[in-house]
Length: 468
Image (spheres, one colour):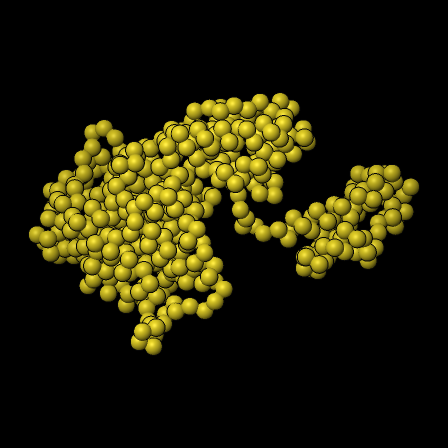
């Protein structure tokens, strides 16, 4: 049969639309999406005929299957791009997977604020316009001991706003060993440049002394900047200037000291068996004038850059035009307020903030979770070898880079397909399962898996391994 006859076999758009499966898609999906997928499928058939890729029998088989293919394409195209995934990697603050999970109280508050109007910038007592910062400022002050506080959309914005307010057109002195690169290849020097501050590097990569700061101070010096290297450590022959020493230098020369502390720890984590991570309270107690930190890392809240310290400086920041560009919205405020309220009771922090709960899990709790997932996989008759193994989790999110937390994981060894193929299939199911591959083994670290996901995980494994 010639190509002209084959082209005539291709069904019309109206014929495809009349199919019950495609017609049903119109009830849930936009018509424009349905039409786009139909035309795309029909164009695909034309290309195959044009390129001599099909004969009559093959074309007719493709046409018979066309409604099913189009239905699948429509549903896939209409699916949300941002979706829920199951984090089985063991990395608690996984930047690629959305960092910290919110406490249930924070989730509920966000939903409540989303459904209704709120007093975002309305003072209910005075009956006039208020400040959006008022909803979180007092609780931050209580927790940190700072004079004042404000919040912007992330910590890089916080650093830029601080420098723009306190050191624009002036020099900001910082140790070479603290010129860190943060997520997305953004670097502290670049953030400083955008703020209008002039970077002055002192010391060496591994050693900076108090005298280095002293020698660098001039009439043009605006601030002394300390950056906590939360996402890496320099080991060995090292030395750095303590907070107390830096504050003393600042006071001697009447120059404010600011600190980017990074992850935003508000608890002493050593009591829970973790390595020491500098807390915001320690910085305030040491006399640092302004401290900034993230809301969505070890603090366990939404993405935010929190600024605490002396009221005189924070009042100036609130007047800075840049503040408008980096301000937080009502959803962030709602989530952050509820998260911070939990910090008024340390027990609630460990029990209700997912990041803290996962980071402080006991080995007994991890073993119980591992046994639970193992039994669920076994009950579904999953076609693979699996066993419980000892592994290491990590905090992630650029926090506590040296910490490796003892954990339990399920090791999966498929018999019919490769580990790489299994990992790929798990990424392409309805609720993707993001696993860890280590030494050609697929691992499910139970530290970061919710027990309510066990049944779905087991059924998904059974399904994807059927296709082997």
